Image (tube, rainbow, N blue to C red; front, side, top):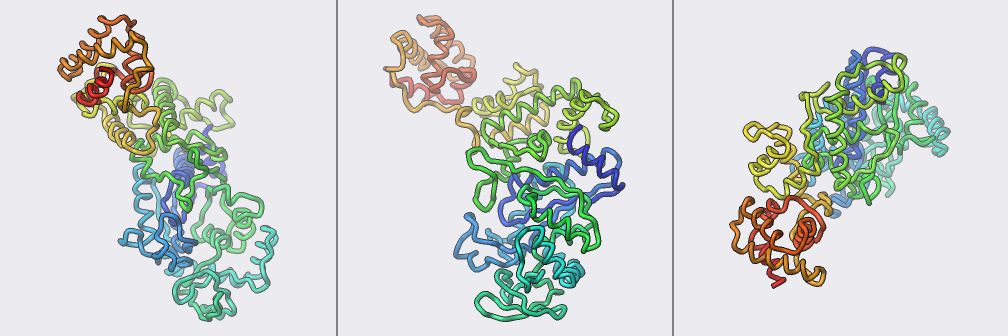
Length: 524
């Protein structure tokens, strides 16, 4: 059974209606690693829906969080003055709209493409609208109790005058302001540089510290399930603390699930603050939504994911293509059963089927009854040697029976994204087809050099269309002392500096007559 279905069964035992929460601070580009949290929540919602539960996904935009530092992607002179202020109050990096919107708009666009249905809760607006007022009152009334819980659970003693609210000063900065007195709804404070002031809590002038805020929102929004990153999962961490704080606000803590990081190959865990990211929108520009979803559905949340947007992505996409063929030929007829009603073998097949079903952008099932049957590795080659879609489709008509008059819309979509991928920095060098800069004659035998020279002379007389070039290749090989396989290897080594490649005649057309002949002329 798929892990999301296991969670849904556990939630069903607690009730028929559930709120599944996910929250990400929009302090920078929302990357594929962040997407794991959102898609984990989405998979749980879909699994709940499959067994008839009422489930809603809410996305908490933590716009009340302060800008903690000037990140590498920000201008130091412009944003240095804003450190400590709520993100919602900051200008957008492009000068249009708010800072959070700049990062949230492409993120929400990606969620829409992925078929995620969600309700947005803007945390800063919630504070301004007074939705946190009772939670703040409760926190202040239970200040000593909360202080002792955090100190005991975290093993990080808090000072006796610690206060459960971070007020903003007259500039909107929350860093370094120490509360000295509270007469509701006002708090008095002194800043690190000795300034004093007072802030109206009811007007949203600040926020609860994170550990308290998290526990408060569980009650405020009736949250019953939430996934959380491993940074929150350590003993004494914020999730652990929240379990003890939740009853203070009047509710039990939600069911939780820890998820591991997604690591970007060669660069470590993705982190916007370090500029080590691939955004969800960037990934969707190069692969279809089902491949991005499959990246998450195929692995249990407790296992980290090594993400390679180059060769690894081709392997992932080809793995998905094989699963799609298997699903339509066998797995689509699998009867879903719960754990107590099925054998281990049945559960393995159900899990396999669900990995595919949950990878689809639509809410359930799939719109198609067959796979495209075209591997991404093959498509990546075609997109490099066939610059026109008409030629690409004509080639697939011969090799895969594609109807050029009414091609599958999935194919057209994948070709568009594949061309974006080929043009991007992420496309693997090992798969890139590029004409050599020069030919080293010392790397070839006398027979091979003679063949290349003959081929060069014949090319100069050939019409530069695929059929004529194919005849020229065959003619040059028949007039040489090389075996056909050796001749082709020689041509690939000379043109691409590799031993094999795509169909040569089509490749020559795309490489260009002047470029190829100029290269081969180096041997004359």
